[in-house]
Amino acid sequence: MSEEEKLTPEQLEYQDYARRWLAENRPPPPSVRLPITALETMLEEQRSYLHEWQSKCYHAGLVGADLPTEYGGGGHTGFQRIADEEMGRAGTPFLLNVIGLRMAIPTILEHGTEEQKKKFVAPALSGDEIWCQGFSEPGAGSDLANQQLFAEKRGEEWVLNGHKVWTSLAHFAKWMILITRTSHHHKYDGLTYFISPIQGHPGIEVRPLIKMTGETGFNEVLFEDVVVPDHYRLDEVGKGWTVAMTTLTYERGAADGAGGGIRDARPPIESLVALAKDSRRNGAPASQDAVLRDRIVKQAIVEEAMAQTARRSRVDALCDHPMRLPLQANLNESEFLQHNARLGVDIAGAKASLYKLDEKAPDAGHWPLSYLNSYGETIAAGTSEIQRNILGERVLGMAKSK
Ligand SMILES: Cc1cc2nc3c(=O)[nH]c(=O)nc-3n(C[C@H](O)[C@H](O)[C@H](O)COP(=O)(O)OP(=O)(O)OC[C@H]3O[C@@H](n4cnc5c(N)ncnc54)[C@H](O)[C@@H]3O)c2cc1C
Image: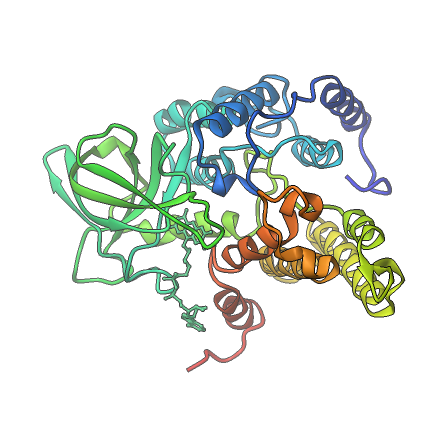
């Protein structure tokens, strides 16, 4: 919460509590290196460390703070953003169950039955049950409505057959939110949204995929005669596209009011300044190089502009279109991270070729790893091209691109 934003006395008290709690409960360093974001978590040691941390934060009231108490939330208003900012300020580890917090919970709260809300929300908040998202298929990425994984109704159950791909965290997931095709006769109205059990469920096969960083984190998930009860269907048969749009709206930035705990693993601008002071350029500290100084300042200005845009998106009178500002968030953030990482690589110069296992790598090899990783960020949740199309066509009302 920016200092100049007005907080109520209750929010100020909560801010103070969150700040103190985080200072007193910072976890000890993990025994293995953590990845840059939750989406690259691959080792059991990383999972259990991050699970323990999320559970602790949840029980301390820092996760799900604004959600209804009957589903395991704190029942407050305007607390979650404070908790998220305080976690960012404290530099504590990120929360593992990002898909659960950011996408599954708000989608279930908007489209789920009472029974579904009571069953799924609280264990997702504590991180006890990890979620993954099965939207992408080999032939359905940007063209999301081209889903082919088929769900066939048999009595009170559905039988699913097909293939999901790029499924982050499926290797740890208990549940998946997914779009299926239930009719070949209609493109959009032939889609239905489900929650499917993953871990240990008969007919599910999870196959890890390796990223160019050498890490894994996403997977192929094969469905062969997977039985899902009808009460795990989210909303009506044929309404899958509408439900998927809810998920995507949250995934692409409208995270306020969701489970919370979404904190970027974004290094502060000061870390670029420190790197420049420690690196050499033409026989002098790189921090004296006029071009690098200029680039660092430009990044600082963009970061401040993003913070101001986030504030504007919370003021109704400034939002001519409800999604104009929230929809920019994911696009701006992912491209900002990419420029940041590229700048770190340029400042480190030849030393950026030392990767994360090299003792002499600046900042333990963070910059080249972050740069390679950043290409995933500008693809996941819809590529930058697709997000520009959406902003152009749906928000600005421009003509559809051919
Ligand atoms: C790190 C990472 C994590 C991911 N995690 C998940 C996950 O958990 N669950 C999940 O379901 N998916 C996940 N994805 C998949 C992601 O959503 C898709 O990769 C993305 O939507 C693009 O789809 P595609 O890979 O099929 O590319 P394509 O759709 O084939 O696109 C290929 C290229 O063509 C461009 N393009 C396509 N159509 C247009 C158009 N109309 N106008 C302009 N350009 C266009 C795209 O911008 C892109 O550059 C993840 C991806 C990454 C990188």
